[in-house]
Length: 185
Image (tube, rainbow, N blue to C red; front, top):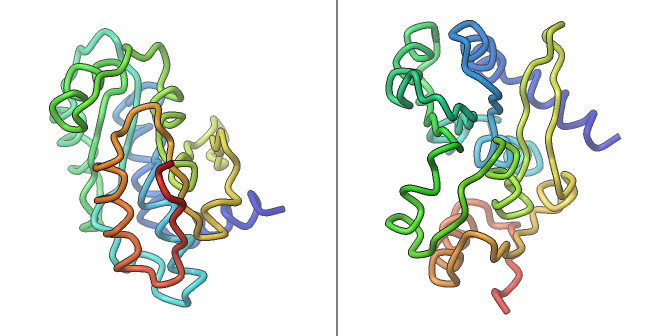
């Protein structure tokens, strides 16, 4: 039931659907629109705000070990097909381990599939969707969607430090008053 509610929310955001269609049109392999934007539309709906309020970009994750096209090339190809002005942040999970230590001050093993990237995120944000061959929304939420709907953030120590977790969660609490954050330990 709650996953149906999320699918309904996603369908209410034409910019998300348009972005997913553009990803498919450019041949982005094994992709999901995931993370912050999905969680934030849930939170905005709970707080009766416009669904895209404070959504700065759409996180688009994909997996392509061939790296025929760079992330920037895919971003450019996707953006050129969009009529909306929400930025897209395109990340290839096949190479994400190469920059992880610089960004998050910890190292991770190379992923073998796109879903491993999403599994490393905080449970409330480990939610993505793609479109199947009939353009229906297909969700991937390894920890379920309950934490997002409960506005509850729990640590995921797989690919994050305590300092990074505290910084990230402070930003969310400042923007959404109802967010509850579990301590790191």
